[in-house]
Structure formats: C-alpha cells, structure tokens
Length: 127
Image 1 (tube, rainbow, N blue to C red):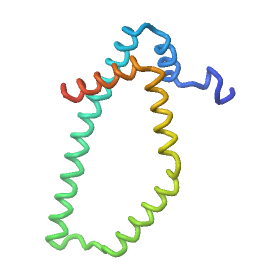
Image 2: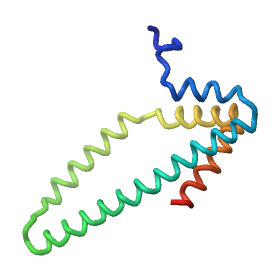
Image 3: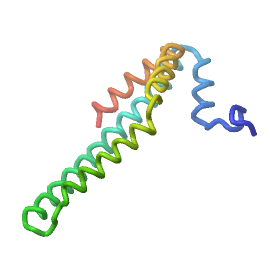
Image 4: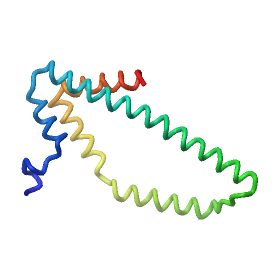
C-alpha cells in the first residue's frame, strides 16, 4: 500500500477525518470527550512522573551528600551539551512546520478543536 492510501491511515486519523464532516454538535461532543480523556490521563501521569522524578532526585542528593555517589560534573556537563546539540540538530526546522500543521488543523476544525480544548481543561480540573 502507498503511504497516502486509505489502508495505511491509523484508526485515529480516519476517525477524525470522518468527525470533521459531522455536525458541529457531534464535533463538539467528540472533541470534548477525547479532550477530557487526554486531560485526565495527562494529569494523572504527570503527577506520577513528578513524584517519581522528585523522589529519585531527593534520594540521589542524599546518597551524594552521604558519600555513596560521586558525580563527575565536567563529564556530565560535556555529555549534556552533546545531547543538547544532537537534539537541536535532529529537530531543526521541524517545530515551525508542526506548528503550521496544528494551526491549519484548528482553523479547518474549529468545533472539534474547541471541544477538545474545553474537554482537556475539564479533564485536568476533574483529576
């Protein structure tokens, strides 16, 4: 199958293509429900990740202070700089294109995007 053919699309892409042809009320409903789900899961996962990362950093700091861990700061800074340069190289020019695509999607699907945004905020607030 060709990359642009109907069979190669994910179920989400084909579902939202069908949803964009639906009535405004149905688009708001679909956007709101999917936004709520994403907001709810995003908040729950974010809290878990923040707790895990914060706890790990705290334990690491205690271990370093007690002498169990020695950090080679110059090597760490060098490796972080290399990773930052590699990330910048790989993502160069992709962000503006991604933002343009998102802006076009929102303009073309105002009801779906509005429902999603509202649902996302409700999902964040309800978790």
